Length: 316
Length: 316
Image (cartoon, rainbow over the protein chains, first blue to last red):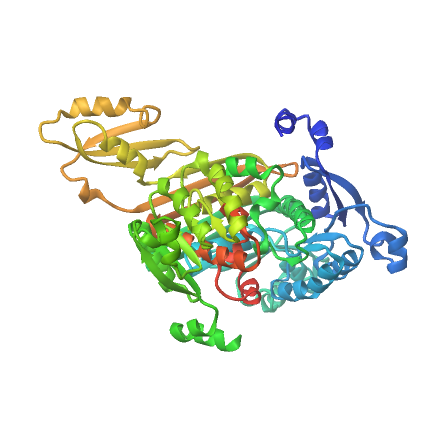
């Protein structure tokens, strides 16, 4: 133990890495989040990068025979694919006995995905951690913790300033829009303003585009401002933020006030959270705790590298 | 399930209470925290207050024979005693097969207490949750979560404004001091100012008392101001606060910034957190996960009343 800490503290990471059971983590998908996850794996003292897979690699997307002929030498696969592809890949990986972590972010369908994967994880003795990002994800853990601290009251999750992918895609789909960026601006109590920057197609009329956008279901319910720009690309920035508040009641004592704030690089945080959850998945599998879990079902300590004793002494 | 929610939502709590397996929670000690814990138990939809015990009740502090003759009809005992009495009572309860929750707050000895209780919990099939308050406790969970989000960087926990019991007792021990209140004021980056309000004994010299207090090891290392007052009692207020910050690195992305703030009634929050942990202890015991745990080893969902499905849909 002392030797491990010595090597770790003095940054001889490669020596440290050889001393312990390394967790082999693979990445499926190499967009913003896949790249960020790769960096987080490389920075982890207890992990090695198994491989980065493209979504049409036979190891991950062939039929069962092709997959068995191209086995994946990894303990955990991070599913850094578009959210809609997550359920299919998570099922395939479970059947190959590989744990998965995803950042599935369709809030209304998370429980269904968990129910879909649960029997497969139990049958094939794997752990699948779903919706492991910052919201859903770490924000969910903070919301759960605040409920435990003050069971009655109101929690507001305010997002931004930051880009909303869903709203940007919806804006881009309006006729006459060449490119669009929709920024989410927090106004408090869970109310948001949309600042939509649009690059018009040649000959498109701004007033018509603006009117159509404001009627769109994605924008009709929020305060929305549409701003024409020459280049959406020049505005691009992966910064995001959260301002989460709760005022609640502990026992019969009112006015207990809490807030959680962050200002972060969005894909970097998502990739890092997935990697920390990969560690938890690996440990839960080793411990025989097979199944599909959301982040509020994880023990925080399982996401951290190192020994229980050192972690308790350092953190608790 | 639908019926349960119906009763719960419409506040017919006593009907709801009969429909589910009620957790029987007892309280040992009836100071500020014991009273707050009592209120939190009464407010919980899935608990009933078993009994409040005085520390010299034969059920909790007799010899083993006396304890066996006065069995405690409870699933979990909250140890709301002075911190130094926690280890002994926790051991006794484990031997009676009763789960415990305490808010043991001597940071340097938490791991030792956990090690002391672990074999007893395993032998007698109980769960003991130690250091379940807000610091150590929920702050520890936030610190763990932030480490999972940005593994490299600095976390600062800034306390207050609020009363420090340890410093107040130390000030009261200075000759010439009749009563004292030491307030902790956060100055950022974990540095604190001490504002010490003292009520002098008849004939005591303020300058002498001040000089002795500033030399005391409790105060010598912090910026300390000593203020004479007529009545310390009139200043009493159980308000407290935390301002916890982290700036760190996710993967190889720096400048990820986080903060967690709260302004709370101190005993009310401590009592509530202990009660939420009693629920986790009960569930872990039912699930065969015997042992002694700190809060960073708990699943947040286990602290919350209700069904997994409803909680995931509401929080994640």
